Image 1 (cartoon, one colour):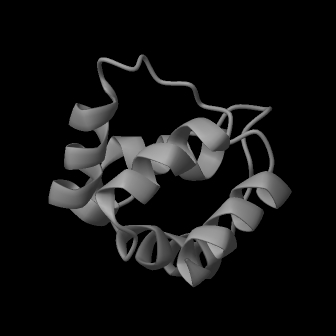
Image 2: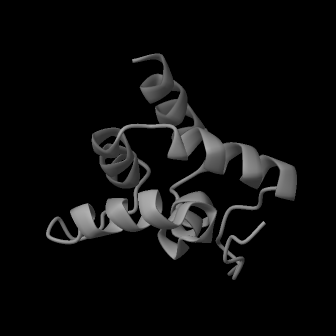
Length: 90
């Protein structure tokens, strides 16, 4: 697995298995869903940068630093998982 794994005290903690599974689930979303997930998870990237961030996630997959940011710096596990499940069913 190639996810950048630099953690701070307030970052979410996932097992390697969870990280891999979540990455695959996120990468299966449409671009507009990934963009929404970034902001709904509490990351609030600059709106001018969202398109570049999403393209980086799609292009680089698990190697994307932005995907790592989404996984480890979201507001909470509960929020990230709720929105991910919501987008998967819609």
